[in-house]
Amino acid sequence: MSAVVFTLSWWLGLYLLARDARKVVLALAAIGLCGFAIVVALDAVRLASVAHTGLLSHLEIYLVAVPGVAWFAVLVELSRPCDSWRARTGELLLVGGVGALALVGAMMAGGVDGPLRPGHVLMFAVISASTLGAMVAALVRPAQPIPVAGVVIVATLFFALGNAILIIPLGLLPSWLALTSTGFDLLLLGVAVALWDAFDEGQALRADMLRSFTGSIVVALLFGGQALIGLAVTPHEATAQTTLTVLLFTSLAIAISVQVLADPLAGMLDWLAWSRSPALRADRAALRHTGAALPLRSADPLDDLDDDTFARLTRRALGHYGDLSKLVASPLTALPMIDERLAARGAPDQPLERANELKAVLADRIARLKPRDGGDFGTTEQWRYYNSLYFPCVVGVRAYAQNTTAAGLDPTARQAWQWLVTEVPQRSLHNWQNAAARLIAADLRGRVAVPTE
Image 1: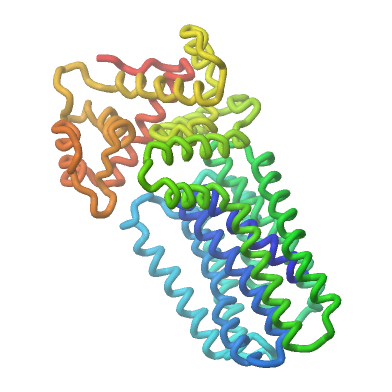
Image 2 (image 1 turned 30 degrees about the horizontal axis):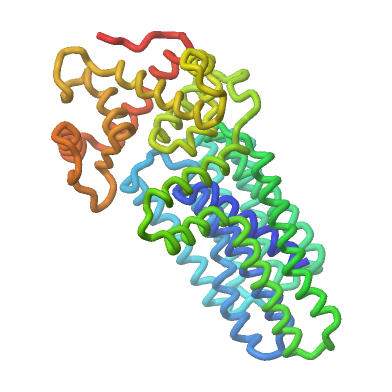
């Protein structure tokens, strides 16, 4: 059962990370899931070992705090009102405070094995109170596109799993019962977080997740099964059992990692093999990313979409303007005007053609936001929508990224970069981009025309 729970948790964590490691929610959920898996594996090794059990118990009590703190941070992120890292200062301090209290509890407990001590109670209290408080905050001021029921489900699973990782080593419940219920909760949690991300991106999920799950189960059986057979036939000698238990979990971790992270690993191999052929590496990366995006396409992506959802998907597509592999999976590739444009130029109806056509449509709509008073750049109010989309999305001006400069930009883009850095708060740019995206979305649906004067 420990191997099954480890497999589920490790796979789910890596799967969420592989979806988009730049998304804070996915990265934090992945840290929690992978941390959970490590604790399950470490606990199994501790129980199989007769030597160093005290050291392993002492190490494990600190690791059990990682999933709970990471999942608390996920809920805090779901209720965070702004995309700016500077706006995360308060949230970072809050998460740091919860982590510090959990660390104090771990120091007081000294180890994960029983009996129940005040340190364990403090850790239970910290994880429970922080999770419930974050759930209330996410419900009161939701800042992410996730239904209320989804917040409750995810928070409940965080609460249950964050406490379960403490309960399992203490032996307060039968091991088989705790592990079985935990495995079910882990599966629900991974699906819930992945569904949130798919909803946010306007993507399908079932085909992609099923393929990843099937591949992980196959490699887990092939590699982990050998270690399980070894455990079953090896005499119950402590050293041998410990060695095979370590081999079991390391084999599972490596096999699943290679399967789930095949795309980035292939990119690393390409870099090693063809370090002097950047064009070849870029072409192979584009093909890999496009292939990975195909299962994320919905069959009927634009059916029954309300205006708010359509505007959010338009904003996402504008943010992915320079990434065809992301645009391939965008629901906007199913717009009727894409069909008309493909037919007009006699192009085949293929995913990459649709993505390129969508990119052209977005470029056209952004260009129509440009004031017609002459010049390529201005700072008056009528330039805001055009500037907020054209320079960051089309030109690639990254004014707020750390250690970026205006080097390599043309004179007009350099002016825009200087203006954004010195005069435009990141929150203001974010608001202008959202407003411009809503205007373009309305134009794409034929509700209102983008002004051309």
